[in-house]
Image (cartoon, rainbow, N blue to C red; front, side, top):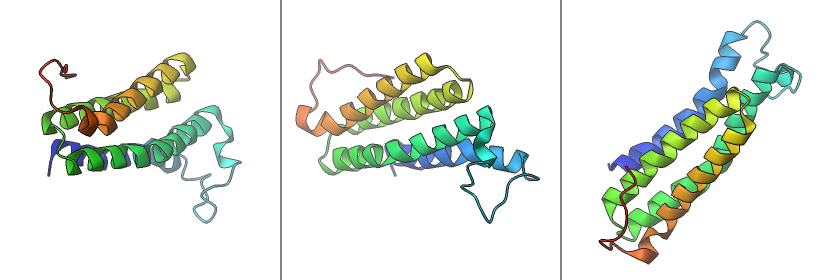
Length: 136
């Protein structure tokens, strides 16, 4: 497995671990028979954790598709790996910014992560040129 493949797993774990601690730390008020009860997520931090979790679910399909397509089309694996690590680091920072209620920083991080993801997707079209910068 490549580093980018492990980053796919890391992205899933990141969005799962974004909301799981909120549920675990509030086990007395969390009703597992109603896991999507809006009243549970009424507190600001809980709501932000849910928002970050849902955004992680929303961004994952494009990330997974981009990595798989780039690897299938034999794009340069080191670049796929570097961009995938960059995407995962940016998504982690995004979650922290979301939980910390830093909306401007959160938006910037989301956009830069999207650009990293777009770069992975476009790698097969660009090829391995010596002028292409290494991101990490």
